[in-house]
Each structure stands twice: as C-alpha cells, then as structure tokens.
Amino acid sequence: MGPPDPPQNDRKDIDEVYHDRNLLAIGFATIANVT
Image (cartoon, rainbow, N blue to C red; front, side, top):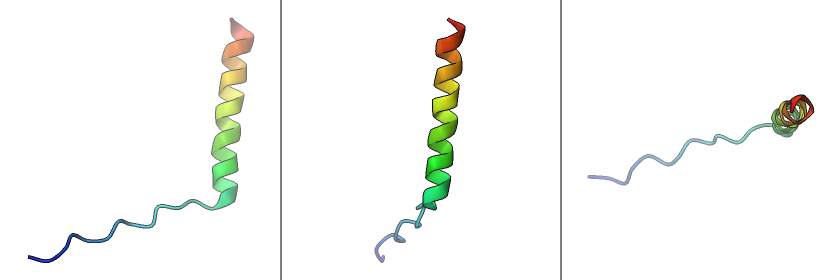
C-alpha cells in the first residue's frame, strides 16, 4: 500500500481572489445598507 495521492493544486489566480473578495464586500455593504 503506497502513500495517498498528493493534494491537488487548488490555487486561484490573484485576479480571481480579488474578484471573490470584492463580491463579498459588495454583498456585506448591501446588507448593511438595507438594515
């Protein structure tokens, strides 16, 4: 029995990271503005 497969490289491009962060910021700002 050999070692398990190494984990996949799930790293995102930096533009994707910033895009995801910006979507979260917009979502939180929208919620904060509604209440």
